[in-house]
Image 1 (cartoon, rainbow over the protein chains, first blue to last red):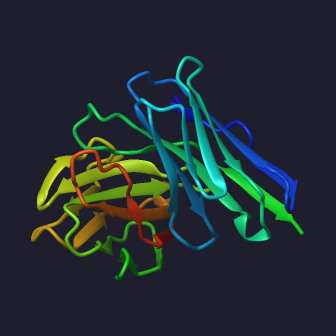
Image 2: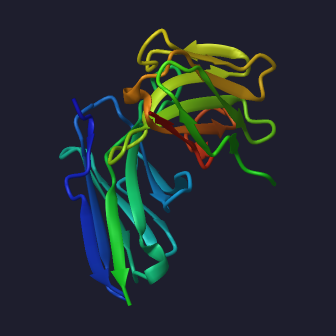
Length: 114
Length: 115
């Protein structure tokens, strides 16, 4: 039972355009969400996060939007660069839980074409 | 400063062998997590330590899996009598353990192949 779903296994965009990666969750106890970026043969690297008390968080080229009623979040990358090509994982945490463990989606492979 | 390191980076084991995977977290990080990532999947939680105490081991798939962090820093994940379904990347992550601190910092992982 996937509690965090990334329904697009892959996404291809042109350099300079916007990349939009989507994530849905089913567990209403999740109240903190994170995006990680992963290059081959490396561990996931933290990118950006958002608390459920907010609906938007921005950091440079990266913006995460949260729609709690729809249990949906998205990561926007503007403008996209070839170095952004990687697998992006959406993750969620329940702050009421005892350990802040993360529940991950399956990931979306982003390819940014020059 | 140094990030999370894991060793070995690659491990090939014959079915039935025991393996031990090591994690060196970021210095001073209280919380340490182990995750298992199968091919084409996201990381899945295995177990969690706060200092030397193992507070959650609900994700360990069987009693063949055992983890320890005896001095609250380095951790070892041990898999006994390895099976082919244990083939995966094993990721270690650490975090400061401060209240409201959710970001976890991952190591490069150990890729285990059981033949």
